[in-house]
Image (tube, rainbow, N blue to C red; front, side, top):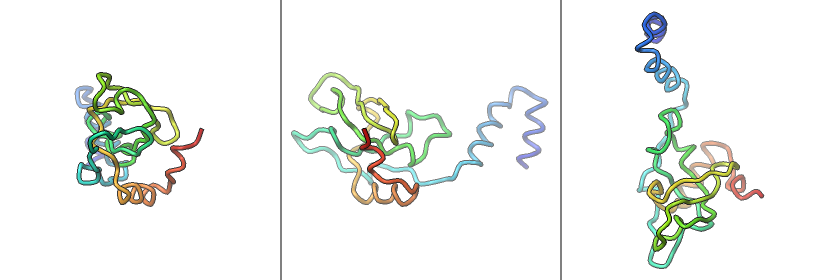
Length: 131
């Protein structure tokens, strides 16, 4: 069926983007999406600095909405502090520098969520802490 859709899309440009999305979605390894059940909320006086947090998938394009892209190591920024006015949070997504906003953070990742992420993707949490 997918081949039929591809042929049809090549003939009709209107459906091209929809087909590209379907192909990418089929090629992705479908994995779990982390939710607030995999997080712990901050207590009074706590912040996100030097913690692994779970990001909401709504900030990512559809092809990147998976658990692999949700684990984020927060390093700093005014968004790490709930009582500050700023919203940016700086840190690392894998070993790459990345910035997000506080409203996209679901909470602090539980130890079980981090271990599940490590075993699923064959990466260690030390990847985040390099440099």
